[in-house]
Structures are given as structure tokens and as C-alpha cells.
Image: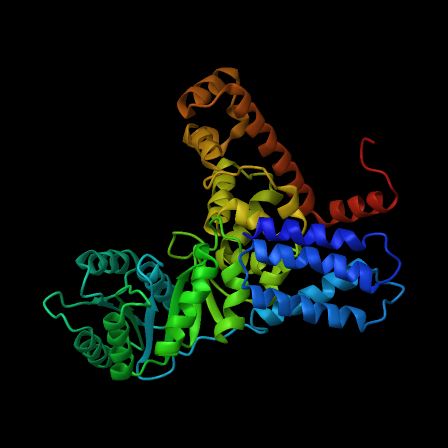
Length: 447
């Protein structure tokens, strides 16, 4: 996410490295690189110019403290301005009402239907709501079918009527159905349309007028860059939406839409889609996004994802097994499954400060654990429960069964044993205290 933009910002800040003070000359040189980085990321030209203007004004108006280098001050100012550019505080979703009604709008192929499913999943599992999905794309039966498939997958009811060709009547009937059946949020998925298509734009304006939604969200593919911003402006002029959703932010996106859209249409980004899975949806936090753009990571989001997968009772059981030195490959596999639920590994690594730069150029597969899982699944239940049983002949059988070579099996066994030892050490408070003392004294066991 935004790797190229991050790299170019770092290049810009290098201009100030080793400088003792901020001057008009080195600020101008730095901001020339910053402006170039923003334009390369497909940020609106006017937005980029205004951004660098504000940064210059702040930088030249501040004294550099002795404890802060000019480079650090410039990063701080750019961070403040990036947060402000993307909306400041996170924007909450208004789903109040009886029921709350959320209307989706956007271009064809922007990901509206998939996002509608993700939003229903988010509201049900994280907000305790009972959502109803409504299929109002009267032009594409496949879109209606897709929403039904998503609804079945999520266990969320979908309201549709393939015989009715008026989306206003379908939406109104759906809201009445929601009131009669205890649904407290209605998510209306509409047909994709072009901003230049007057008839289609009139249609969604009529739907909005008829159902008076509490939220009208504009869903846009972030990979379209500046085009996304231009389209957002055209839609906002017609239907005055309340918030933006950026989809496909995990793809090869340059970041222009995320950085420009708030400044151009003055509407907040509320959600970002970060993958195909139904739980790959994040609330948009401008500060956290600025952290990531400037290579600072996003530890808060990483911890939140971990907490979502954390089971206190399971953790207690695991702690007991570790203390008794009974941690086995079944437990190891369980930990892998929890990590996988948190998202793709490359995205998780990017949330750790400094790791985004360290991982540049390193290809990480979407399912980075599949080879490890294949080896573990090729073990017998006894071998998983008692790894000490695994001898030479068993290793050959496991390697053959998993389609991996024996060196990979040996490597996994070594990693497992090292992990087991470290977990055992960390579970014992006395051992931890001893380890801390040795680290303070500059020595480690066996060194």
C-alpha cells in the first residue's frame, strides 16, 4: 500500500539529512521532491501545490529545537498536513433511524456490490446490527445473483424483486419489509452508472429523494487515481453523498484518490477495502494512513486486528500447554490460522514501523503459509501431537506427502523447536527476569 509514495517521501526528506537548520533553500529543495512525489502518486495538481505551500509556511515559521533535526521537523509538519488533507479525525457512519438506510452509488466495476456485503458483515459482527441487503440493480440480473450469493455466505437476508424494474419501488418495499421484520439497517445496492449518463444519474437522485437515506456512500476504485476524484466530484454535484469508500486499496494503487478526494469534494473517506474477503474492510483513519505513507507503520491497526482474533480462553489453555512443554504442531497450526485471519502477510508487515522499507522488493505470496500447512497436514495425528517421533524415515514420508523437499521439513522442525523453547522461556517469569538482567549486562547465555 503506497510503497512508491513512501519511498519518494523518504527521498525528499534526505535533502535535509545532516543539515543544521531549516533555510528557504533546503526547504524549497525538499518540497520540490515532495510535490513531485504527490504528482507521481496522481494527486490533484492544485491539491499538491496547496499542500506544499502550507508545509513551507509552517516549516519556515518554526524554530528547530536542539533535540529535533530539520529532517524530523519536516516529517512532523508533513505528517500533520497529510492527516489534515485526508480529513483529520475518522468519520463515523450514521446508521441511526428506524431503520437506518445506507444508499450505495458509484461507477460500474467500482466494487459496490462486494462492499455492500462487507458493510453488512461489519455492521452485524462489529456493531451488533441486523442488516438487510437490497438488490436495486434492475439492469444486471448477475448483480442481483451476486448479492444473494454474498448474503448466503454471510447469513444476511437479501431483498430483491427481479420482476420489478423501478428501483425506487424496490427500495421502498425493502424498507417496509425491514420495518416489519426487525431489521435496523438497510443497505441499498444500486446499479453502476456513468457520471455523464443523465438518465441514470436522475434515477439514483430519485431513489435518494424517495427513501431519504441516513448515509449516501460513493464507492470508488482507488486504482483509478485522479479519475476517481473527478468522478466523485461529478457524483457529489448531483446526489450530495455523505462519504466515500475506497476499494482495492491493497492493489497497485498510487494513493492519489486517498490524498485528493477530501480536498476536492469536501466529503470524508469512511471506509477502505483491502482485499476480496468479506472481512477485508477497514474504517479509514487519516492519522494511521499518514503514518503508513511516511513509513511509520500502523501498530494500532495491527493490534486491533490481533485482538479481533484473540480468544482469551484458548490463550489460557495454550499458556498452560507451553508451561508444561506440551506445545505441539496442532497448536502451531492454530496460531497460523489466527494470523491468516488478520489479513495478508505483506499488509501486516507494512504495519510494523520500518518493515515496509525492509520488505521492498520481497515477494510475499497471498497465502505465505501454504507450504508450512502442507507439511503439517502431511504428518499423522500422532506426529503432530508428539513431534519428537519424527525421525529420518518419517521426514521423507512427510516431504513426499506435502510435495516439499526434506530440507524444508528440517527447516520447519528447527523453527518449531526454536519457537517452542522461546515460548517456554517467556512463560516463566524467573527466566524472563534472568534474561533481562543478562541483556542489561551485555551478555547472553552461551556467549
